[in-house]
Amino acid sequence: MNHYELPVRRPFWRTFSTLLWSVAIFGVFGIAQVFGMIAYLTKSLGRTINESDLMAMMPTLETDGNVLTWASLASFIFAVPLILLIIKLKRGSSIRDYLALNNTSLKNYIVWTLIMFIAVMLMGWGGTAIGEKSATEFTGSVFKSADNKMLLYLAVAVAAPIFEELMFRGFMYKGLAEGPLKPVGAIIVTSALWAVIHIQYSWYPILMIFVMGLILGWSRWKTNSIYVPILLHCLNNFVSLLAIDKGWA
Image 1: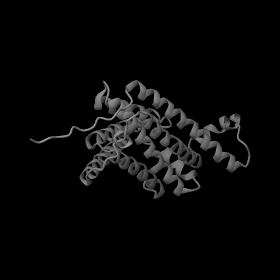
Image 2: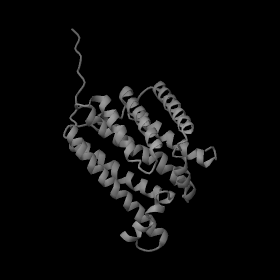
Image 3: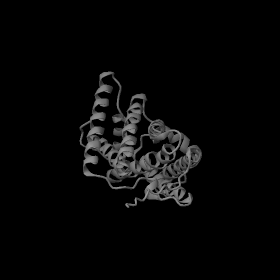
């Protein structure tokens, strides 16, 4: 007689707890970004930055590549360990299982990269057809104002995508997909929330981000690997910067 072992079902935070923890993570994320901005401005200006200084400079800081670089790196340093800590606070949970840190086939990487490439191209053409700009103008301003381009690449094409995928397609997806929303509902909700945090863009780039989120979430679900959406996200951000760098956009 053959005996089969059922897969171990690890504990996880339920829907309400997932949302509460997510608010806490985003709170730390926001504080870390402000800390990164203040640290950079204090160093570059050579004096202490107070709240009134920060508010006065805010309109220009939005597209400042140096500020974005240090804010992104600071939020990554503080927020990613917090996600891991919160997962471990759930007794019996596994970080690998929770975040789907699973290997997958080369075919999966290639197929989902092609899907994302086609989707981005179609949405880009659609935006041009209706006279809506993509995020190129914003990205261009960020890139041109950054003093250290390599550090900007690290922040935008590595640190930011890893945090966002661990957060949206990792921690949040797990808690929502295991609840009443199921995987499809979790993909839609996390994509919408991911799009909303990109308030620096106009409506069409935000719509594009939502659609990209659907693809990222779908790839996470179908491959059971967070590495696929991380790769897609990193590639997208890297190519966006490279296009500005090389004058392709």
